Image 1 (cartoon, rainbow, N blue to C red):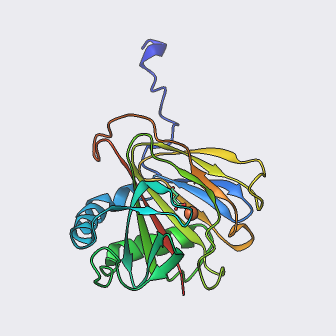
Image 2: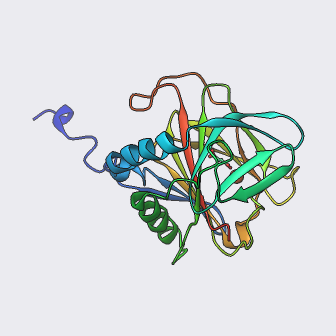
Length: 221
Ligand code: SIN
Ligand code: FE2
């Protein structure tokens, strides 16, 4: 047998096994964690979006956000000229936000646990849609009543460059590439870290097309 017949990849990790990367004291990227959940997540997402479609919102400063937003759960995060807030009603439909699908909740809880946060009970899931060119400027998630719970952030579709900074806006940020199925969890001492998304590059994702979808789970109240 020629040496060429040896299986060069016999020792490589199978592609779908999640890998955990630590990016802060209590911050982790769970590679591919959402992939096994996808066939249940996407139909549930469609149901949510049918009731609460994506829309672009305006910041208190008067800028239209490049990402389009929706939410599900008891509370939804919104912004307009009057400020940022959590609201029980979708300002677009005037109806309560659609309930958080069980599969969303279960995935968020499983990811939090994997990152060392037991008993995560999210009451809101912000859904961000980025088309190429859309971005999210560096910010802290500070609209929650308590910072005891972590943030669980799921990436689907086109890849993105996630900026994971420090506790001051001007602190140096790590650049963390995020791919379809990756989940970032940060909490505890890292809960108030600045973070953002660089402009999404043009591309076509085989499953989701020309977009990136992000779910951000939080305990707001
Ligand atoms: C956010 O911080 O609201 C979104 C982050 C992301 O899209 O990954
Ligand atoms: Fe955020």
